[in-house]
Length: 223
Ligand code: MD3
Ligand code: FE
Image (cartoon, rainbow, N blue to C red; front, side, top):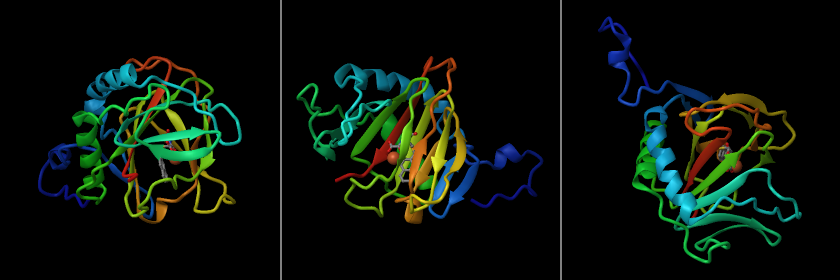
């Protein structure tokens, strides 16, 4: 986004409606600092309905390890990990029911953030929801279970801050460390879509909205 500050004394008048500083991270990857800050409470409220229908669970990796991050999903497709591998599926293996629908509050924020990053018409059909408690982490990985890598992933952080690890498209390079705070959104597309990434062990804290945890919503077009 190009901003001209010459025309007015008040630079905040010039900021877009969502007033998020747009911070390029890598080709195709953009941080929108605080983009979801004003929607955080609404997102948190919507999340309670999802968790009532599809409870938090610690999935098992194909290698047989219990993930430290608790997860659930909403949308036509939910991300699942178990002994037989990683995949998207329409049914929650715990309840035997379809995953709950993605709430309109979620879809609106995701589409606005994607558009702000240059991806108009983003219509995710999967939202993986991660809950980090102190010590929980996500080891370096790629997201490649989706069909079309031309579609971006939009990630919304709520609650305790985390150190996000952002590597290259090869596992070799040492990842950059980026602090993500409540309300920050990152849009990952283009050449960054298949970058290795992870989350460092969460530090303890007490967030006014979420308490002792960090929530991450990742919106995907999986199907
Ligand atoms: C970069 N979640 O759910 S979100 C995941 O904070 C995941 O919970 C992390 O990695 C979290 O798979 C990071 C940011 C993110 C999501 C997807 C990406 C970054 C990405 C896909 C490609 C490159
Ligand atoms: Fe990921």
